[in-house]
Image (cartoon, rainbow, N blue to C red; front, side):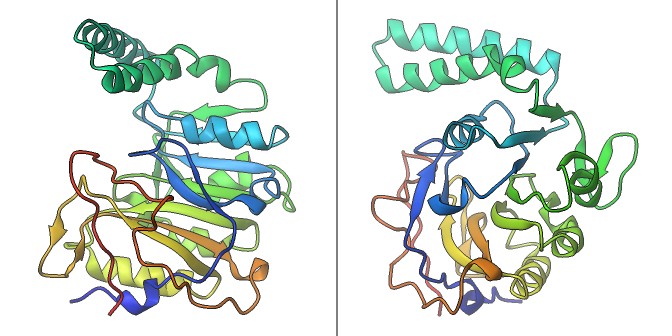
Length: 269
């Protein structure tokens, strides 16, 4: 089974910007659709919600709904201690870049509960196909936590392989979702699921950006990265877009997730 690369060739979008970290945790998104969103539904946050904060800074009226079952009080305390120690050690060793990295993560932990309160909320649930005591479906998230039916949603998703379970619900609510920025995992072992996801999405969304995550390996058997980040825009917001003329990665927008390794070139043939 091979990756359907032609379906991944992005369409031209003139106002793409980088949001979040310069390296891992950042996404390329259309600036014009940030202020169009009433809700940022952020699936998978770990200890890095810089994207969420920057998004709301540009759209203060937007609500942020963060969902991550791994993040709770114990997690926050543990990460606060770890990042404090790492920040101090790298300060003493004059490793300014690493010191800054862990200092930002420390601040994220310290201000977690002040950010996810009021109109914002954090759900310690696991995104899945169906809802249960721990699990929660995308359908339930949209219906119960994303406001009125005419509120538009910006969906950010990094849920470590569970993304393939939400495609039916995503398409079901496509009329409310203006942009999807998602990371896809295990393309070598879930090639069919990935191709099926992209095919289903193509009925409602255009691909406008793609980037290979170089923390994952480049898989020769599929001639493609194991993990990729893709941005989609709802077709109702883009009429008859032209194919992008960029080569990927895009200089000035894309940076390697792991700065110690070169980025992966994406070829669509």
